[in-house]
Image (tube, rainbow, N blue to C red; front, side, top):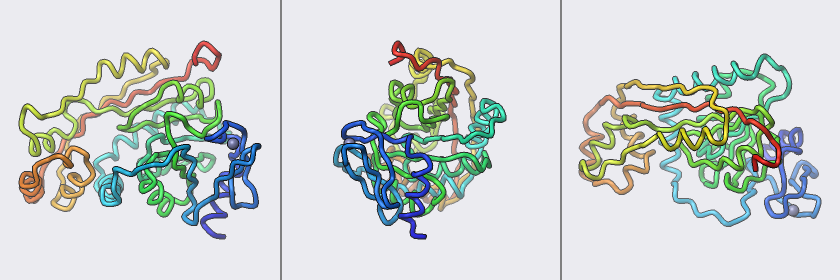
Length: 297
Ligand SMILES: [Zn+2]
């Protein structure tokens, strides 16, 4: 079976989860080749297996190099291993042992490694992963590497997902659209949002920026806004440091938008430290979708 038809088969099992990005009509998989809406808007599965369901042309500001570095940090350095474990634990706790089919989407998934690792941590065969990102480069990489999930180029602010089609929304260090999250989650579905705290990657910021240029992460407003939309079931605060080797430091710099505007000489001297500690300081907000009635829209 080609990647294209294998991916079409996976989407076919979940076709009710998709709606047309152009006219919002229901969609179906045709001939294991395309996803077609009831008004005949047609989206072909690519040879890598992903679908482009973006209603507007996408310009990639994230490069392949950045995504490759991100993948290595996420899957090889164990920097985010505790984040994946905590998220899997929260899902297990709230899933309540249900063996029904369970769909989890990472909205703003980049090259897909967080979603892939979290699915691995959950270890449940009945769980389907959907990764959505506006970056085509990220989705191409995800669909080549992680064949078990559904990969979509699309806009999380206007997602091609149907109402109440998901059990879990993951939103990891990425912008949110709570109105959309509420629409696409089932009632009592989970939204798991990872936000940076003040110490997050502080060594990197200190190395690359002058004091006045340092970016501060402020979380009070994020948490308050989150609470307006969801029942806040838990906040997991993670704070730890990890020693990174030279190759990992280099990937760290490459994967972070912080470095794009940084001074090249400083970047090189940071990478050439050989090894350095880096701080992970994050909150994992775990919210429950309260209601799915008109008042929540
Ligand atoms: Zn349509």
